[in-house]
Amino acid sequence: MTNSFKTLVWVIFEFVLIFILLSMPSSGEQGTGLVSFILSLPFADKVIHMILFGSLALSIFSHFEQYSNISIRSTRTKAVSLIVCILYGIGMEFYQKYFVPSRGFEVGDMLADATGALLGLPFFNMVKHFIQPKSKKL
Image 1: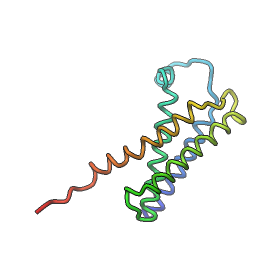
Image 2: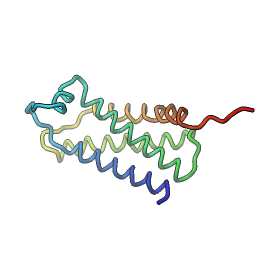
Image 3: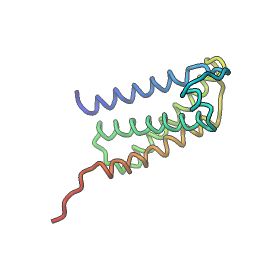
Image 4: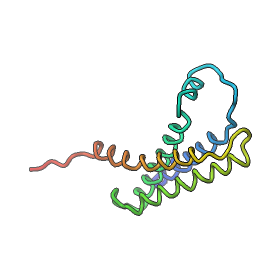
């Protein structure tokens, strides 16, 4: 399996994972356990949106980088990754509004999705900078 195929599979996996997670009806009841505790924290849902869409933006960008051998500094590739994530976030909000019981359309969720995607790309650059082997100067 080539690297570009592996990254494509990962991108598809993330799209499906986000779809499944955002398709779950929100329960008004407070359960017990770690998940309930985390979800009860202020802005936890927004942070989760940011993490999901930041990861998706990274995966999309990584796929484009593998597929087309584009430089990491390519503004066009970053813009495409960001736009795809924003459009998917908007689409998911409409989907939740019309098809998921007890869920609605939230502008705050869309902003969290866009913020996560926007912050995910610089995070990718930072991580890649530290992971890449340093060339030795002679």
